[in-house]
Length: 538
Image (cartoon, rainbow, N blue to C red; front, side, top):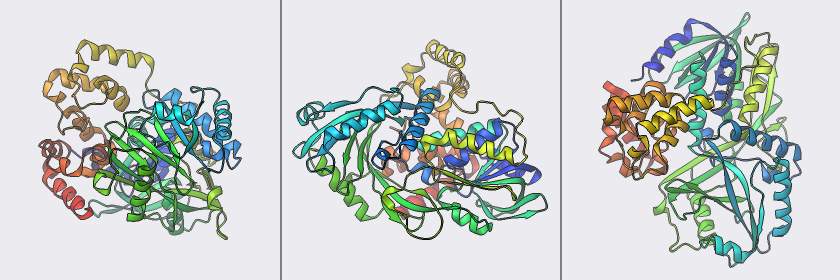
């Protein structure tokens, strides 16, 4: 069922595109969605899966950057708060307010009351868009969240930011999917070998990682949106830029739910940095680490696991300490941090996630450095402005390319869902009614999925226990979501691999059927490939 990818790969060498975007993480995805919606002819490739690297290993938070108040980056905080509010307004089903329940230990570098004043400033900078912060004494903290170990707690507070209801990779992929609906030709597992300027065009040699086939893509402009690999790609393409990246590794561990609270429990870890206990449906996500690494290819180490487990065991009053055996899944990614110049050493603590776009107007080549999910809409808009300066016209420059479908479509979907009693089909293991999940994940496409269930009730069956994925959703993924390997589906289009233990997935009776739906004749080979990958990682 990989016809979409095969069809797109066949189209890539046939045209001269206005823009070739290399990299399908958040920066590449929003660039593709914005440009194609505004009328540009766009190609998008990624050497792995879309959102396959940094964009699938975040904390799943969309936040206004409260920690940057400490380094007096008020302009950045102001911008990120505006961006967060913008996302919450336009993705009300996906980007939602969540309370951060913060405990400050005795002897910390600032008194709780002083930091609480900071949260009030933060709330004001956020235009009072969320609930007001409130101050909490240690007794109140224990009363409200008994799981917190308050022996060393001086006080605390709670304030609001936002989180992504589904996983980060799903949020990113929805931009890729929307870009394809606007005419973008996108393909995963297509790697860039090199690009060279021939006359007025860029000719990029690329390789299909699945077949080994090499071919050329022609474009007027190139956007290097490869996240942590921007510098490597620029070196290959002989591009000199003002910025470059340094890397911070962030690790999260996912365990069975350790508290019923729907708030993010927030602390400062042993190294003085923020440490989160984040609700994740039936699971809990804990972390993160923040350590400088020399390259993007970072791995979870025993030291990382020990740091996270020892901190969570110290900060929470758990019935029994968490150990490595409790870990269901791990998330490990590098944060690409943009710094100017190539000499000297960066002040690590001062670095922030703000993005930078370096432009070579003469060769029509653009590189995106840094960035984060919260600021993604701004990145898409800025990229469009730069592309216009290259003399590439955008026929619909003011077209709004982001946001959930309009209220009329939403009303129609929920009306039909009620008429057919969709929510009565919600599996007992589900964390929310089916209608809410369908709308958030699929938008207007959810209406067609209702019809599929109406025509064939078996489409409403759960294929993998505890997965929150029905047969109809797997069918939809097979047809419209460019699933090339089983991991693409289990880890990125869905979060099954993050919330269902690996052995449970492998032994699930529905796994083979899911593979048959996703891959048809290649199902056995794709399943064997996934099992081999999993076995090697254990």
